[in-house]
Amino acid sequence: MEMIISGKATLIGEVEVSSSKNAILPILAASLLTDEKVEVSKVPIIKDVIIISKLIEELGVRVELNKNCLSFQGKLISTQPPYELVRQIRASFLVMGPILARKGKVRVALPGGCAIGTRPIDLHLKGFQALGADISLNSGDVVAKASQLIGAHIYLDYPSVGATENIIMAASMASGTSYIENAALEPEIVDLANFINSMGGKVTGAGTNVIKIKGVKDLHGVSYTPIPDRIEAGTYMVAVAATGGDAIIKNIVPEHLKAITAKLIESGAEITEGKDYLRVKRESRIKPVYIKTLPYPGFPTDMQAQFMSYLSLSLGTSVISESVFENRFMHVQELSRMGADIKIEGKTAIIRGVKKLTGANIKATDLRAGAALVIAGLTAQGETVLLNSEHVDRGYENIAPKLNAMGASIKVI
Image (cartoon, rainbow, N blue to C red):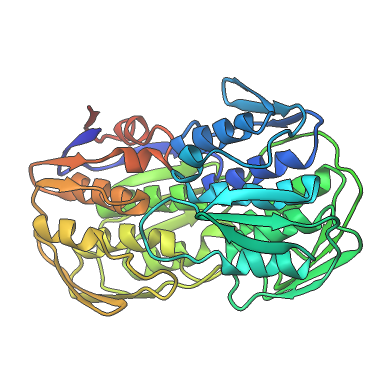
């Protein structure tokens, strides 16, 4: 797929943010913790959601989609998700915890997803081992077995979001009480805990660095609506600021966006905060800023690329230090093709602002890089052709129509 983006757009109006991709994927995996009916509302119809839904269906569960509501019901039969689906999406590894909890064994291929670094799964496996599982590697697959998972104290060497989620799901049906120390603090962790608790689970402390999980014997069905997508919201906030626009971003939790909001204000944008919306406006030149990506509540690594496009047009030199994932500067080469002046030194990008970007043929290498290049195309002079734009569809529902409704001109081919 490709997008043809007309430059010199000014985004004005309003846009509604979809439910969080990073919240909904573990929630869909957690639906495997019960045979009873689970309904998830306001589901964004994006590629990652479709893939993990197919994967769950392959495990024996009946999956139905009605508009933006997904329902799951039926017996979990298989303990080995198919490789052709697992390799497409990293979040597929999140089914390991619930399958292990329910069936006492699971076999999963090493996961795929965006090529933005190693993102090792060893923390997931250490957690499962602490709960009493035997772990082995067999022909490229990870195999875990446990006759009964037992509650344990688990310390994470790094506050990994995926490991925290996987361990919560496994421990939710273990015998006894588990504690995860140095747990990830992300809002998506809180949402998963709320989902499991609404099924009858006993998870406390989510959103802090110590999470307590008291195992229960059974979990029941539930209807649930996930939180809004803070990264989608942040992407539209940056797009509006980058184009010198004035727009309202609706269906958000302002608390989740504080790090993004702070950097936009520092760069010269004006932001007005409401209960569930933000208004973003920029009239003055973009000021340079320093950004260091950190686990939540720090500045999100998933917003680094979008800010780099924005700061390419600043009046001065900005610095972005990437401390979460290595190999996450693959958009730099494409931005340079559009006239950006960016120098990479190890895990740091030095961005010298230029007066203009120019439309070019460019290529998306991953989800957030693709979003950054869309923003660059909107601000550039002339037309930009974004190849491999299917990467963007992995995480953004209807991004072209949403931007077009605010004044962009994007054609998807």
